[in-house]
Image 1 (tube, rainbow, N blue to C red):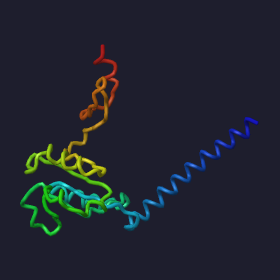
Image 2 (cartoon, one colour):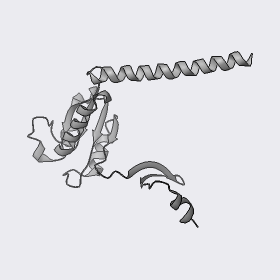
Image 3 (cartoon, rainbow, N blue to C red):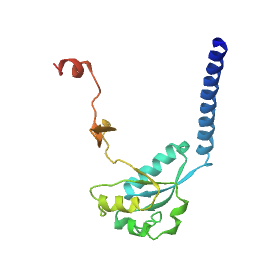
Image 4 (cartoon, rainbow, N blue to C red):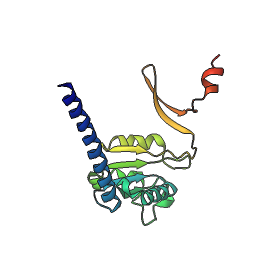
Length: 168
């Protein structure tokens, strides 16, 4: 009967939605208490490291703990939290307990962006680049130009003016 099938799929959909929400809520709660956390490594200067630490403190439900910090400035090497420079990263055997690498880059960094990418590419660990730009209108949306991958960084909001009048 079609009505029974419709009821079955409706109930199944509702069950899956509630199940998903409850699991997410449960994970958020236990991660905010420090359980079920994931170990992360951060590469960047001290200013960016402190920003990341602040974010993790404000949003503990993210579930990340920065276990190691490798600076891109030699002046940070003496800091008690710093585990050395990016060259020290290559020789550390502790990498195997890391779930994710976060890194940022600044124009003032002593290490070139290309070198950081090469070293991180050799680690075979999930890597996320933390964009330093403090501009709220950055979109960083993925797009394709034919078969070429690109990042759309300035994506103004669609407006009636943009869609109708400017396109005449």
